[in-house]
Amino acid sequence: MIGKHKVLIFGIAVAVIGAFVVFAMPEWFAQRGATEKKDVREDKAPDFILPDILGGKFRLNDQRGKPVLLIFGTTWCPACRDEIPRLKDIYARYAEKGLIMVNIDIQESRDKVSRYVDKYELPYRVLLDENGDVAKTYGIRGVPTLILLDEEGMIAGGRRFIDQMLAKMFDGKKRSEYKSEGKG
Image 1 (tube, rainbow, N blue to C red):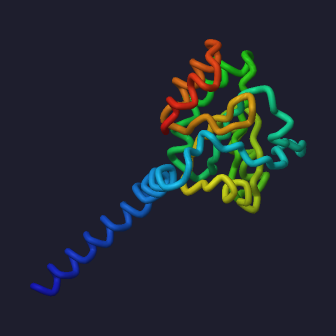
Image 2 (image 1 turned 90 degrees about the vertical axis):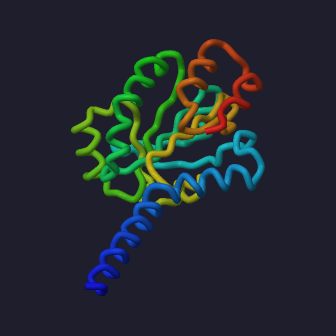
């Protein structure tokens, strides 16, 4: 009987550790990285060129002068699917005002991503990071990850404060007024 209890306790411990690795570690690493290195909001966003699902090319530096929202995700991610209504709302509110939104799908085929885009009727451009190189460059450790860039191509903030930062960007505040508020 004692042996069965040890196996049960071991199984529970493995499940708890597994849940921590899957759910908490990406956030922990993101927070740790943000505090151990210089403030990421002062960094220029690394340029990249990626194909979109229609065969066109997207270059980040070509978007200079407009705010850009990078959405890193995958088709298999439940949290990415849960985020779609919010992202569609952001697109509806700010695209006509100049916001460029791009979904960067990490390491999946064009066909799979195209079916996903059609199924969920994504209104914004979807790019293919087939090798995961752009995700690596940006230090993406979990999806979905949102990164907001200002008009100068500087990283303005991340996921938690996107809505507030967009509202301030499009209400006419200068970068210096909102860059310190995006601590997410």
